[in-house]
Length: 281
Ligand code: KMH
Ligand code: ZN
Image 1 (cartoon, rainbow, N blue to C red):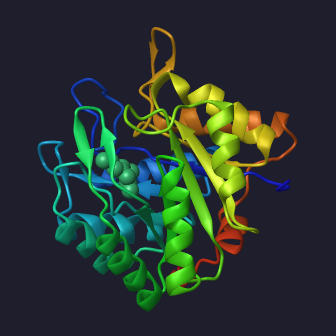
Image 2: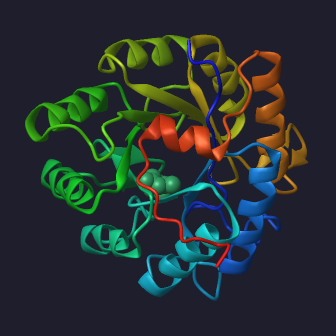
């Protein structure tokens, strides 16, 4: 059982409508402010999607780079960019975000129905993305939406060797309409299939946030929370901002006697290559 708990915040995502969620950080400035407040509340890693001037999802490299650099300057969080983008983004544009030189990136391990849409992750794309992370020393986080995707992740590791940094970390995204259900049974099945020594976190979308969080703490996993996955704090009570989701996760991690990892502890666990500049100069 891991002694501490990595808390990842996924503050924005590509699917939520800012008109329905006033606290959604859609500007680079608000993303950086969110990073600060979430680090204070207990986050160790931030999973970044950016939006354009209209609040719509974009993979514009200038904005992604500004977010990565701004978060690196203002916080100690591990900065992870999404290579998933939105369901409408091209594979080419999704690969190009690595140019922003993040600490980490998501790497989704297979194609999955995503509500009424399809989230496309063909094997050749997974291979290209994985090899680029190895060359660029960017630590991948393997996103698992369904049980068979654990097998695809192991296929990548078997064929192409260990990830940058040497640690294998997977994130179970549970309860997406089209993916695995947000049940303890599905969680246990996925975790049992992970390679020896891998660490993992879990997130439940929408109303599955709480049960998945409690299940993950009980099973030795880490946590991902944020407005990418959940816009409701409790029935009838919208999320005000991401930091309250992180604060609740940190409080539950304390209760489970597995307190939140600091960003430094998160970096060590994930094998992050330090790209921070010396801020004292
Ligand atoms: N927006 C979803 C279709 C990731 O960030 O890598 C995909 C996603 C996964 O959010
Ligand atoms: Zn994402």
